[in-house]
Image 1 (cartoon, rainbow, N blue to C red):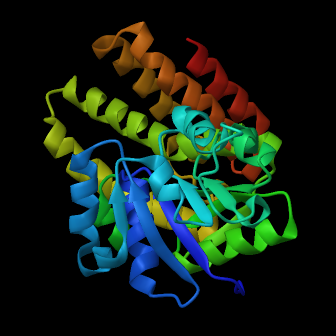
Image 2: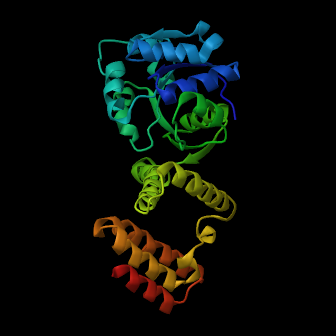
Image 3: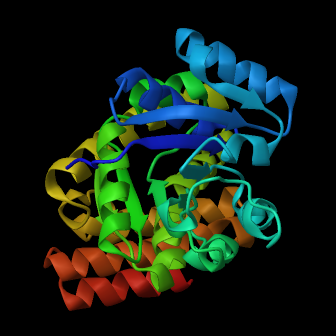
Length: 309
């Protein structure tokens, strides 16, 4: 999929996302798609972006002035934190008497990269006659160098209103080496919540597991090595067989004696509040095992009763 006209991109926000996206697009050396400007609030971020882009930075305007960056483009990527996307868009399009872009507004595309925010945060651009859409990478960007190395084959949630916006969204995702998932605008918060559960809550669950081991004298660094190997195997299984069929462990086997031992030792070494996560996840896990047909209703009810104690 390609677009016929030239797309000159301004990136507003030179954080991990903005800089990563800028590097990937610039390095592809596309004939019709190029980065023309990058803006950020701090000189430190600007300098980091310049260093990251290296030779690719020579023909790019770097500035702390968002309007100056946007004025050079017909496609504006707002890569700022979610809560200031609306403010930035108003800064660029909210003043009726001030035109920051010389081209016709209907030829302008404004894209935000939030997984949770609806398109209405770009209303200032819409009201000015510009096209608005969103592209969100289902990717944890812990650092710019690592993101650049691992962003290929990422899934992107895309939201748009018109066929032209759809073509642009899918073209950009294609340039980034990713794959598109269409997300309804009104349902973006749930889409984003699913991403948070899969990524952020995995960190919390790992921290919980490390904490349990700490209670019996195992050092966190030792726990992480062992548990991470276990998790990596589970993630691989999920990729090959899906979530439900990748379930293993005592609940999947209907091993109620082991679950009783867990609860007995929890009460010996942890407080009631610490046990709640185990109980909650155990009940959900029992439901999956039951749906899989791996445990009978009688065993399921027994597991639920154990987890209530």
